[in-house]
Image (cartoon, rainbow, N blue to C red; front, side, top):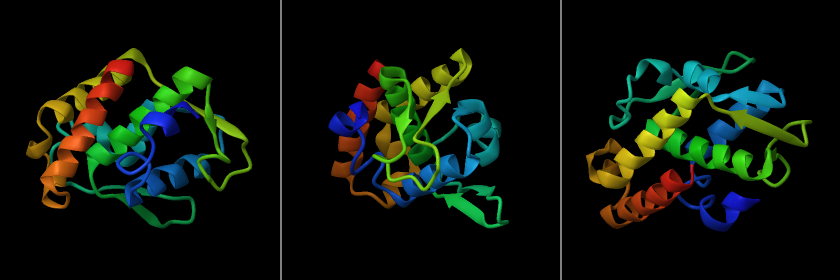
Length: 157
């Protein structure tokens, strides 16, 4: 996969929030999932572009369990990386991502407005990483490393 060589690892794809997103995508059971639907399911569609605060995002899975993403920026960075993979290779290899699904691949799609929102969120985080509440849990040096990755990802997306 393209993103495993450059983005997917410690900061993107390596958090509990990343696992929650992958579980969510697998549970959808569909080959194509629009970013707008993901935003709506997690409540990001009402955030009005402010992703700096540490407000947990929650969706309820098909079994009635609430699944939580602790930081919006985690969801956005992971989603942006997965979208880039779909752009580069046409979809996500569910086995390589170790997703529990019957689907061999799935695809994330984004309307121009949703893609622009992801790009702007990445740009803002790259420029102002210490303004995000995630900084309360992550050392400054790691925040700056993640910000640099987000800047690169933003340019590619």
